[in-house]
Image 1 (tube, rainbow, N blue to C red):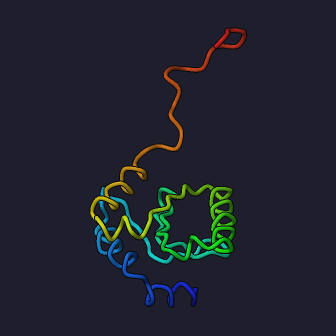
Image 2: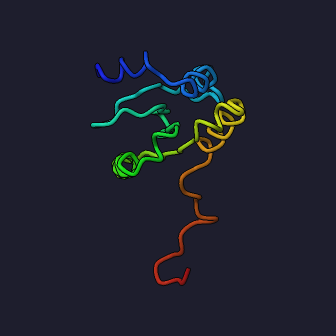
Amino acid sequence: MILARQLRKDMSLPERTLWQLLRQRPGGYKFRRQHPIGPYVVDFCCVSERFVVEVDGSAHDNIDRAKFDERRVSFLKENGFRVLRVSAQRVLRDASDAAQAIVARVASPLHQPAAGPPPRAGEAA
């Protein structure tokens, strides 16, 4: 919790820029910034939709950092979260477009429901 508080104070420029848009609850979705989930602190989280947004800067190109990111994404997915990685460059280039893309992904269901009722016992699908 202390780490999350410190990270909120030390957000990068792309994170601060994106936060200015996500804090306005686009699409009616409430996001939290620098939110702790298990042993990790994610950049942004829409808890109600179990959706995480990670802003990747140049540090994420480092091999050790990439392995850490892989473990974090695996942990989040195993715990029912969807994860979207957005490049810091994209946010700086067009934060509004990045925020719209995030909302579109939050709104898209994880699984598409079947077109009709399940087949009855003994019937082929």
